[in-house]
Image (cartoon, rainbow over all chains, first blue to last red):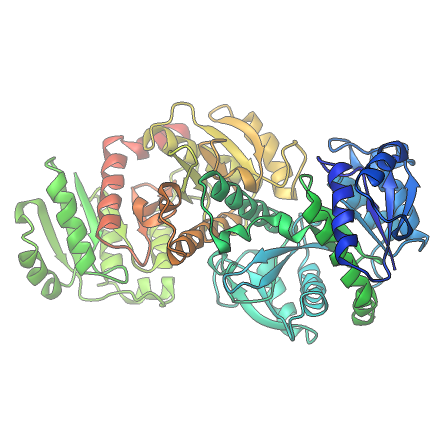
Amino acid sequence: MNIALDMMGGDYAPLETIKGVQLFLSENKDDVTITLIGDENKLNPLLKEYSIITEKINIVHASEVIEMREHPTKALKEKQQSSISIGFHLLAASRTDAFISAGNTGAMMVGALYSIKAITGVARPAIGAYIPRDDGKLSLLVDVGLNADCKPENLSQFALLGSLFSEYILNFKNPRVALINVGEEEGKGNILCQAAYPLLKENERIHFIGNVEGRDLLMDKAEVYVCDGYTGNIILKFAESIYDLVQKRKINDEYFNRFNFEMYGGVPVLGVNKPVIIGHGISTAGAFNNMILMAKKMIEQDFIEKIKSNFV
Amino acid sequence: MNIALDMMGGDYAPLETIKGVQLFLSENKDDVTITLIGDENKLNPLLKEYSIITEKINIVHASEVIEMREHPTKALKEKQQSSISIGFHLLAASRTDAFISAGNTGAMMVGALYSIKAITGVARPAIGAYIPRDDGKLSLLVDVGLNADCKPENLSQFALLGSLFSEYILNFKNPRVALINVGEEEGKGNILCQAAYPLLKENERIHFIGNVEGRDLLMDKAEVYVCDGYTGNIILKFAESIYDLVQKRKINDEYFNRFNFEMYGGVPVLGVNKPVIIGHGISTAGAFNNMILMAKKMIEQDFIEKIKSNFV
């Protein structure tokens, strides 16, 4: 397999991306080639410095970088030689099997949607994020930002996408799916939730357990939590801020340390035709390593085919 | 002033409500009469046991109780002799100046809306909740559950209601108001936020500072955070669950201890014609004391008149 990594994406690139690659290669002796996309002049000295085994990598030069604050569609159009543009080009051409970047999030989303495109039958791809659970396991929150406004059918599809990820990547058998709402009973909530509930209940491909409230999200209630991307994004960023505060308050607690979202690397774009993983801007070596591992597992599990067969 | 308290509302009533009254009276020598609404047969022995000064109180017998799980409108209609029904009756008739209950939340909301009614000009009353801030102060989150679906105009009104509460009850001069969104720039977010932003910007009665993200809610970014009631409810309950986890993990931290929402007592219904405060079901003495203090301040500040004069 061939996993492509944007070496220029993220606040600490390319140093931390290089260190992430080194970390991955030191632990993985399997048949994985990593395609490093970025400025050769910057990458070559670092590859030497960190003694990266050259037969495990493949460098593709990118002369441009899409900066964090650039407008996604405009930048993708104008910067064809940027690491993100080249990454999607290689992935769309099947020259690589997955693409990872901690660069401009908007450009990654736009690239995934317009270059890799949604799987036939998936109306709206979504982004899933890990939620550290009270019992040591990980739940998945979908959508965390790709779709600020959703239709009820979208939530039902997010449930299935999340459920498949939970099953094949997080190894939960028959993962429980819950709808995030303001009360437990059917009929509660906003118009979207009221309309989504019966669709989720009727969806035979998922194990729907009903509504859950904000207080349930960190508990062992469900493996997949579904909501619109506006709500999910606010929950995720609020949870991330808890970790910052825990750090600031010098609290060292096994559970709250798991709110360090860098531990999980990045978030998968669910429902597009290839594995695409978006990293946090502040990603360091460990996060890049984890993202490569996530991409590897998605390829090994033939995850995209699993989705396709569920959306025919 | 005369503040009415539902003595039968909450999981630990009437014992904790009595203890809350005792606490309040021990610290407040002012001219406050508390109207205790509940079952005389249960209250009288407790009043004796806790040596409550009888000239400071006024007992109104209520032979019924609306239970936590009852359907709000149905219960209010059928149980006219319940403590909540009587409480709203007394308030509507101006025989009391404020009403507090930790009983059935739905019944409290319905009672406030249909018995006390919205202030002229307020399209949708809302519920405000305290958010413990990093800098030791309190921000206000509006709405946390009265309006699952909102129109842009509603959010602009929530902003003003919250702003007035922040100014007159929490003593912030010129409180900053922010819209909870998925990105900072104008134009970001779901359709509701996109449409609410210009209304907030044009609203000359508030100090609007723009969008904030989920990660900003616990920081010193704004005094008032505005969103629809679905989102606000999920944020609030998620935050409440953080305190439960902090307790469970035996973390004793000054800041995270402030996530104990009982410290603040209850949440005010903003935009109705009288002060109405809804307590948490698990309220204990300290929470009841704090709710009485909040009601007292709302009356002292002539808070309802402040709202009325801003909505003419």
